[in-house]
Amino acid sequence: MALEPANNSDDPPLGGPSIVAPALWNSGDNPGRPLTAEERGLLAAISTIVRFRKGERIYQEGDRASAVFNIITGVVRSYKTSADERGYTVSFLFPDDLIGLAESGKYVNATEAVTAVTMYRIPTAALEVRLRNNPSLDFQIISKLCHDLRETQHHAFLLSRRHAIARVGLFLQMLETHQAAREGGAGEVYLPMTRSDIGAYVGISPEAVSRSLRELATQGVITLRDRRHAKIINRMLLETLISEATSSR
Amino acid sequence: MALEPANNSDDPPLGGPSIVAPALWNSGDNPGRPLTAEERGLLAAISTIVRFRKGERIYQEGDRASAVFNIITGVVRSYKTSADERGYTVSFLFPDDLIGLAESGKYVNATEAVTAVTMYRIPTAALEVRLRNNPSLDFQIISKLCHDLRETQHHAFLLSRRHAIARVGLFLQMLETHQAAREGGAGEVYLPMTRSDIGAYVGISPEAVSRSLRELATQGVITLRDRRHAKIINRMLLETLISEATSSR
DNA sequence: CGAGATGTTGACCAGACTCAACCCTAGTGG
DNA sequence: CCACTAGGGTTGAGTCTGGTCAACATCTCG
Image 1 (cartoon, each protein chain N blue to C red):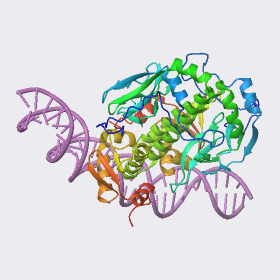
Image 2 (image 1 turned 45 degrees about the vertical axis):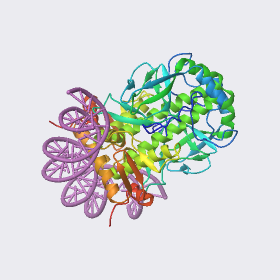
Image 3 (image 1 turned 60 degrees about the vertical axis):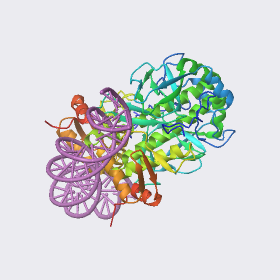
Image 4 (image 1 turned 60 degrees about the horizontal axis):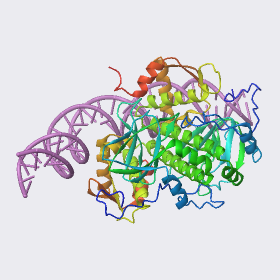
């Protein structure tokens, strides 16, 4: 639910930051569980809650990285401005994600709110102390980072597809995966971002995004309820299109 | 030196696994240092040294992830086979890198040796124990993962470039950065992998790799000593080409 | 209700893929 | 030591997808 703008009032799971990541190795006592209540409390003690309006910038590339953020509600876009003319989207971030990747004390990307956003703000100084003293928390962070790494690899994989349709298809699958985990959902994929945002993420023009969605619809792979809601109705065919088997024929 | 096939015998820095990553935040006592001797010893105690010949497979996608590896010498290619017809290259890995990203106890990519490779093999079970008891080691791993995450983001950025020349240019810069850090070097970029490997990484056909390199050479951006050695001679122009300013005119 | 942003559609064109032929180099075995 | 060969690398010709530009539709928010 947290993703829909109309919030059904049952959201506030306030209990401190929440970071979830699947297990790396399933040995030991780590079944890929989320943070325990104690761990969340530990983080909550050093966190504050911050809100951003739709479109608002959260931080700029190169700013001093004084905190990391943990999304409670909403969608965030992280992007690069430098070394590039039009903004390239590095990633979309959803509830439970961690934002604030830094190098040498500076943020490496800029971020802005795609929808209204609520987050925990966790100062790095305090976090660092907690990390040093709490190995199990460390391990959770490591799992989360590995998860993010896999996701970024997936993004790169998406960008390696040559056809616009394949890229948009993979993007829809990605959104669906994210949303399925969280909302029991109508099986519909919600697109909170603009066509330009999507284009900047999948590496094609907004026009091509439009055309690809339309093409997917005419081929009977998806249906489009409106500009923000799609539904995947033929997964088999979608897979085929994604694999880019030298089309038709 | 470790990258050149002809090894000048001064290599063996044997002292246990070596993992280097720049600082995340430069607060506290972490100036982005590499592992200390004690930490390396801690890992050495649970590691074994393994070797692979050029072209040899290290592990297959989906194999039980029983160990991670830390490269001492050589270059490794990590790639996806499933869900894709021709092999897509996820990343190239160099000395000091860590290989063996897993999810739920299975490797998520396959890997093979591009050149002859020597690595430390670190069993996950033992590693996990070490991690739990050694927060500072944890922190190093976290730094390394953040580093890998930035690199993968860079790969995605590379793949978002539309022109083949820009992609190849970014690839050359990437290789140079990796190599500059380690060899005082002749300012030459060594290309240990085939054109197909490069193409699979930058998302274009091997022919396009060939053409792009040739084009870069004729434009005076690089010189090609032979098929495996390039030298960047006009960085300004390279930057321009990479930024894809709607060319000529 | 109106204006500016967002989204869609169409026409044209450039660049990358494919296919195919040829060259070059490294590694093989005589 | 050399000739041979197989695979990698290069080059060229034709095709096709997606970018660009431009016009129009639609939506959103003041």
